[in-house]
Every structure is written in structure tokens, then in C-alpha cells.
Length: 175
Image (cartoon, rainbow, N blue to C red; front, side, top):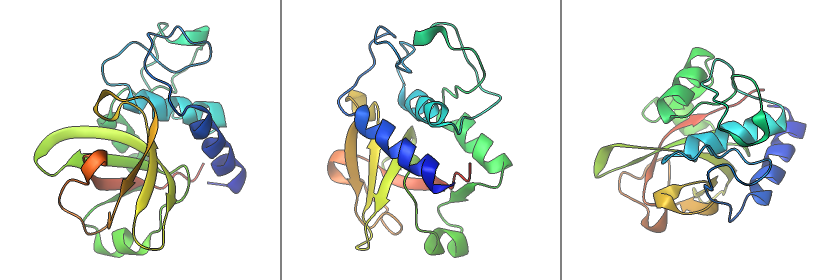
């Protein structure tokens, strides 16, 4: 993804800090009133930054009355979209997984070591040289948009404290 998009994505993520699902009553928000709005947060950020998904599942219940197919309401849909475009790196693909350094704005697929059915979406803020991945996520355990850290994210197979998950894949958005 070109630098201008990464900068815009970062700015949008920061502006959303503390926001929460409010049934779409905030002008310009991505919220749909859904229970799991983490993927909606990611979709909205990409849309507003000018690098939207396509072939999504838009409904008119979203604020602003936006029209289009940029909304992907689940981690599975986002991962499939990225995989079809060869933009997804799965944990366990040794060459790509260990060589790629996530960039600001990349998609993060998060699971829980103790619950393989848990699926969660987030966005990379930055990868620290010490191996900690810094993310911004909406609806992590029902909380508002906030920052999270995943220490030793490439090697860790246990939950990471407050972040409550492990990184299962990275979407290398090329824009």
C-alpha cells in the first residue's frame, strides 16, 4: 500500500480511539448496531482511507446512508478477500510469516489460543523491533476502539494478557 494510504489509515484509526458501537447514531461512523463490529471497523477505515474492499455486504442501516459494497462484516470474509488477492499471510507459512514486517494499516486476524472459534479483526499501528505488534481494534471483548499489544506475536501461542489473543494472520494491503 502506498505511503499516503497508510498515513491516512493511521490518522483515521487515531481519530476513532474511544469510539464504540452506537447503532449508527454518530455521523460518519461505520457502526451497524451489530454485536461483532470489529470487522466493520476495519472495513470503514479502509473505505474512508480510499482503499476499500469490494464485493461486501453493505446494508442501509449504516450511518451516512453510504452506498456500495465496501463493508465486510466478518473476519472470514476479510480473510477470504485478502487471500483471493494474494495479500494474506497465514501464521505457519514459514517464509512469509517470519520475513514479513507488518506495516501501518495492514489487517490483523486475531484468535484465542484457548478458543479456536474466536475470530477478531484489527489493524496494525506498527511493529516494534522487539517483536511486539501494536494494533488498534474495535470491539475487542466489547470494548471501544483502543490500542493493544501482542508481544512476540510471530512465535506466541498463548493469550497476550489484555489483548486476549494471538495473531493468526496478516493482510498485507497493497492498495
